[in-house]
Length: 498
Image (cartoon, rainbow, N blue to C red):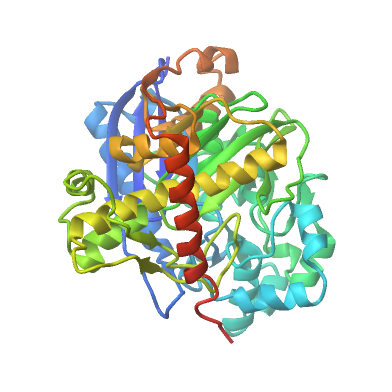
């Protein structure tokens, strides 16, 4: 009887693998960072071969650390950075170009043209998304337009498009060559109709995307096939979900009205909205949460492009900390940010602003400003951006959130979590198992192979580790939000691309 589940958590800056036992307890973790490639300002790329090599490496390392062999693993679940776009040769399996990362803004002008042509409403109604360079559709169109011969080869069925889940499934399956994506990832492409749960012919025609390049659509929890030709030989692949939907599942937010926020490279707040898509009037996204047994469930989502990545910038760009873990101690050496506000719009602004031309700014600097003030302002910027999302979410739903469940690397930062609770005015709840993205992927895979009986069983595993309650007076929090809004206005519309 297999005793463990292996989750692959393929993120924006690193690949991780986590081994879980029957109780959803972490047995071993392995992680490896990979290169971030910046060919031009606003452009962000990854090497697809590095993604696969790092992910395969940490999978083997995690199993070794746990003392678990492949035959002890019931299934593999995949959670992945979502909108990042790859195009590869079906015969050789080689990428034709670096992956274009979700943060990349090179197709902002293309989205502007689509809006100018009056197509924004059509895309929003069919996909639940705004027309923004964030999503995969215009990235794929750019690849087909800019790689010599790519469009003709795609139309001839020689090329495969996929987000990172598709790329991992393809490589995991070896010579079986699974070319698949689940509904949660497909719903982030601008090519997928969230009502019909299928690729949309009209949208494909608008973006000039040949259907032959698209992956097959599968449920988020199902038996897709086995690993082949690698160290994971014979392990069933049983779960796929975009990282944020996986975190929602891992946080046991499986009932309508429950919400979570993940603090990673970016910041992503999702609220479960039930079995029907809810339209947003405040520039949030309507997305598929997951599809199980042929039935889709939906969520409202707000996306912050730069969160933990801003802390990495303090480390790598400014050099004021040696590791990301040092930021809390540095920020805590001052009682507040000293009037400094940092807007980390390094790749534009996401929800609810959707300004691809915004750029990062630091406002309120005085002669007395120190590295500690900038560190604290950086942490506070993550909370301010998340507060903007919750305000929009409450306006859309008409219901105030009673608590916010949190996860992701930056959720271990107590100073940040307390400030988040102060701004939101609701409890912020951190779970005992913080690896909720990987845990969600593990749960989906385990359900597919009968490792866990049903969702009721896995929901009983969720436990609180700490609850942060509001300490700041509401008047003070409101005043800080008004100053944040002023800082935001100074960052918007900074760089107009051709």
